[in-house]
Structures are given as structure tokens and as C-alpha cells.
Image 1 (cartoon, rainbow, N blue to C red):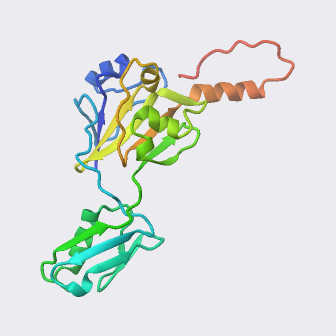
Image 2 (image 1 turned 120 degrees about the vertical axis):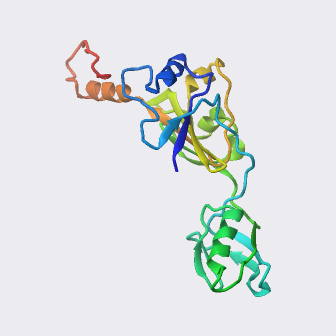
Image 3 (image 1 turned 90 degrees about the horizontal axis):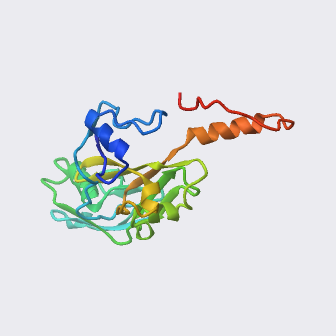
Length: 242
């Protein structure tokens, strides 16, 4: 499935100019191009679309209720095992990890259809669905999955992950989101958001937030680490961006 890159209207001006030319490079000379893959297209959307609804997704040891309208013997309460697999009668193992109730019902229905049940009507409901999360990675101090209730905006999400680390590039923050079968990538300038110059965008369950890296900072630190201790001064020629 392809991605659509969304550059919000309120992002740094240099990126907006580059949208017109479809180059989408960052302001610095370091190569930070976006949308270069063949299956990615640039959109004219002013902001990332919000999901219409938030559905539970199944995790290991989840308890579910399955109803098969045509066969009461198949209906009942089931447990998804520690590997995220559902052992369902007649059809055996079903990979349920990360699926919504509607998606899991469709898989069960498809595998029952024809051989076991004629035109099966299957519904699945979660009894103890996993709490919704946001995945936060890249240059943050504590990357991982965090409850969406504490990561409702981009700033809150970054703070939940311990804040930016020393090599973070705050003007290079991406948010990945899937809405109604379409995948989107939003590019944000977190530095401007943190100063109050731009609004703090909403973050939703299932979003992936990635903070970019500043290779210049890393390279400078390596240079300083290998300098002889007797050196009293140094002048560096900046070729980092080349």
C-alpha cells in the first residue's frame, strides 16, 4: 500500500516552497528528501486527516466473543494465545495479532466459507481489548509504544517518550497514519510548535511518530572525541552537509 505525504500549511516555509517543485528536500544541505519512493505521492491536503473512528486491536492473551449466525456450536468465548494466534474450530490457527474485530471476523468468515459453512455471517467483539497506543521512535530518549490517552498531541507524545535526545532534529518529525485504507505521512516542525508559533497537532491511536536525526551533531562529537588532548584550539571546516 502506498503512502501519501502531507505537508501541513503551517509547517516551515522552506518545505512549503519545495512542495510546489515536488523536490521536498529539507532546508539544510543534508539530503532529507521526502516522497522519493515510486509508490509515494505528494498531496495538497492542509493537514493529516483524522481517523473516523478508533477500533480495538487484538493483542496476546486477549479474550474475544465470536458469533457465527449459521452454527451455534462455533459461537463462544475464545482466548488469543501469547503468540497472538486464535485457535478456532474447524479452521485451526488464525493470526489475530493487531487485527480489529471487523478484520478478524472477515478472516474467520473467509476460511469457514464454502467448505464448512455456507455464506457464514461472523461477528467478533473484544472483551478485554488491549489499550490503544501510539508508537514513538527515532531520536527520543525512551522510544516505544505509549498509551494514546497520554499522547493526544505531538508535544505530549514526544514528552511521553522522554523528550528529544541530544541528536534529535526537531524540524524533521514525521507522523505516519492510516485512515480508511489510505496511508499518510505528515511532516512537522516540532521546534516551532514548542515555541508556540504553530499549533500542536492531534495524535491518534495507531499513529507512528518518528523524530529525525542530526548527523552533523554526531559527526562533530566524533571529531572532538579523537582530537589530541594537547590541542588548545581548533578551526573546523564545515563539510558535513556535502
